[in-house]
Each structure stands twice: as C-alpha cells, then as structure tokens.
Length: 585
Image 1 (tube, one colour):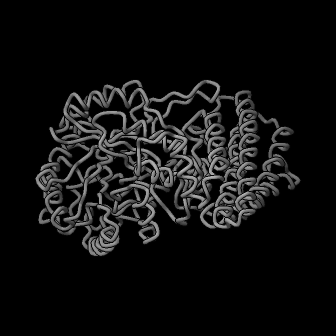
Image 2 (spheres, one colour):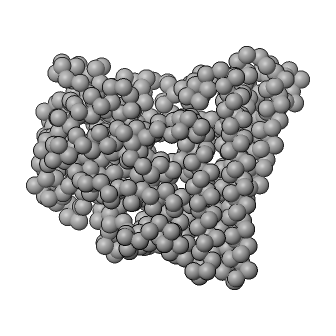
C-alpha cells in the first residue's frame, strides 16, 4: 500500500479477491523511502532515544493498519530500506529529495545526532542519499546491538508479521561509504558491510519463524553478477532473496533495445540476470520472492492510473509459477486510490481461482469480472486488452528514464523530462543523465521524436478501440463497465500524448544547446498545443489520473512568455516562474 489513506476496506477487499495474502504494512510511495521506518516501530534498550516521539505515532498507525489487514486475513510484512540517519546533503540533483524524505520521516533523529554524533557514520553528501547522508554506523557496537534488539522486538510487538523484505538501496548499498572512517577501516566493501549487517539482524526474525528476503536491485552493470555472488556468499543460511523478474531481459531492437533492470508491468518473461541469480540462489538453498508490478506501476502511474495490462499480468503469473524455488510475488509499486476495478487484479482473480485454464479463458473470465459484462461481450473486451498489449510491446523504449513516474512526474514532483521548454530548464545540466540515456545528439533526438510520434498514433488507435467498447457496454445498459472502458480510453489517449512530450523535451535540450532557434520555436509551439490538449484529456480521466493542472498551467504560461518576449530567444531567466517542489528525483 502506498500511504495511510490507502489502508481502506475497499482497497483491502480488492487485494484479497485478487489473490494477495500480505501487504507491506509500512510502505510509502510503492516501497518508497517515505515509508514508516522500521527503526521507529520499537524502542530498544541500546538506543532508547533514537526518535521516541516518532515511534509513538508510528506504533499507533501500524497497529491500525494491522487491524485493518486482519479483517481480510492479510498478513502484514515489513520493508527495511538500507540504514537511515539524518541528512546533511549538499546541493546536487538529488538534494531536494534527500531533504524531503528526511523531514517526512526522520528529522527527529537529528536531535540524537547532536547528542551522540559518534554512533552515526557518513555518506558522500553530494550523492543520492534517500536514507540520509549521516546513517547509523553499523560498525559501531551500540548500533549493532540496537538492530539485534530491534529484530527481536518487532516480532513480539507485531505477532501477525508475515515476513520481512530488506531493500538495501536504490542505487547502491545505502549505509556508510568510504567517507566513514570506521567503515573504511574495516577494509570491506559496502556490500560486504551490508551483508554482515543483515546477518546480525537475521536471528531475531528467524527465531520467530518470520521469512526474511534480501533484495537484489539494480545490478545490471558488467560487474553485477560478481556483486550478486559476493552478496549471496555473505548472507547467512536460511536467508532468502528477492529480485525483479525482468532483470536482464532485452527488448527487440525495433522496440528500442532497452534492457530491463527493475520491475516493469509490460515485461512478463524472466531476464537472463534473474535466471542466473535464481540458479545461484537455488544452489545455496535459498528461495526467491519475485518483485513485479501488478496493481499500479511506475511505468504509467500516477498520471495514467490502472492501465489494463491483463495480458502481461496473466503471462507473469504463468511464467513465475513454472519455475522452481519461487515462493511468491511482491508488488513493487503498490496499490493506491481511487480503488476502481482494475483489469490486472481481475485476471489475477481468475488465474488464482483455476490456474490450469488457458489464457483465453482466463482473460474472458477477467473481462466479466472487470466490466461486469456477459460472456457474449467478453471477446470485444479481450481484443482491446490484446491490442493494448501489442502496442505497448511496440513502444520504442530506450531508457529507464521513460517511466512516467520519473519522466512525467508524481505527487510533489515535476517530471524530469516534462519540464517547460524554457531556458532555465533546457540549460539545466542536472538532467544530462536522463537526456543522454535517450539520445546523445540532436540527430538521434529527432529520430527518437519520430519514433514516439509513431507510437502516439498506435496508442490513439487503441484508445479508440476502448471508446468503442464503452459504447457497446452502454448500449447494453452496462453503465459501470462502460465508464471503466471510457476511463481506460482516456488514460491511454493521454499516454499517447505524453510519450511525445518526453521526446520533445529531449530534442529541445539539444536545439537550445546548438542555437537552432527556428526549430526550437516550432517545437515550443507544438508542445504548447500538446499540453493544452493534455489538460482537456485529463478532464476525462476521472479522479486519480491526469496531468497536474497547476504545474501544466504554469508550464504553459512560461512557454508562452518565452515565445512572446521581445528578447527571444535570449529571454532572461528571472522572467520565468516555477513553483518550487520538495521532491526532485
């Protein structure tokens, strides 16, 4: 679940019906760094004053969530994310996010840092440090004692606990790095220190009979397999692992050729890196929990909500069930309001009821569940799902940065590739990573734009199929189903426009850089027209989807100013105004 507001009866009822048996009870945005810290869910004798006032509040909230889960026979699971601490980051691309998560979840810990700085370590303050640049130093004896006591206390306080997932960090091991003198003196790598850390925690959960899964994440570099082996060799016997099913899966060249390195809702086959890791884990007697995207997804959310990828969801269930030593699926991105019917959850419900049925039967049953339609109308609905599945398979994906949550934006954030096409944004070098992931120069950016425009046409055609389905359902008096299909049509139409906006921004960066002002002016006018249209489409998306009207309205005014000012194209930066956001990455 994504936030306190999402632990509602209708949400939990939908998850139970779909086949889920547990929920990451302290989860934030997906498994996000704004979660309720496990370190603040219990008071220990080792460090009783770590963040006691936060602990009081968190315990009340977790107990409420556990009671809500109990009504639906869902087990609470805990998510650990690295090793937290106060943040003292210096300005960087990730600075605003580092500080945001600090004040959202652990600012109280700063008081402990001021009292006993010696128990905190160091991370490079210019790095992405969502856990904080001054983490608890796990090579300090009192911190080791704290975590051992925490692992013993949590099962006692929360006896319904069904399992633990330990997520070590988004980009690297989020604990001290070489800038910490205590950790540097050990001569160990950060991954070896992390393995030692969870090894010390493990007995508390193991003795309580609680499964513990160490997550392997973002190991797609050439050294990835070596790092994974090093980690697994350092974990204790009995500790299981967790990994994205699609890690190492390569898309065809005509579809961009991207290699997956995280869960993607549009990927249902196991990647090479996943299969190699599964075999290694199996040789060590470890079970695998699969990370996947099932309910919502970082690929589409939050702008395009509940897009129907039932075909891929069913394939994922089938493919994971066919492999030995996989003990379950963990939904990576979570479940959020509004809790309208979701095709992905409907096909899960059909599959879990009778897994042996063929794909067509499962999909037709799911269509009946989702749209509340009779068997005679199910083929048209399934045809729409298959059409969307094919179009998404053809989508030209070059880079992770095309995920909507990152490139278009999420709550409290402007999308990294959905900025207004104005000088302050086009000049911003902090976006070099995501821009160059997609194109290295203006010629390749133009090619990328042309490919996204082709994708846009296919998406729009698919949206029309869903609109036709909505008309059919309405003709048969199936109003609720018609509304769902119309909602899906609008969200797919919006996605069609947004993939082109991303490409325009990438090209605009290069046009601005090279001073191709006529082409840039044409591109800005196109983007103004597109965003005006996106606001109109968003008006049909319903609650829980669509672009942010405040940000987009600002973007439009800024781009209109850029074109209108007499100093074009050298319009001074101080004429533009953008609302600051607390979340930058």
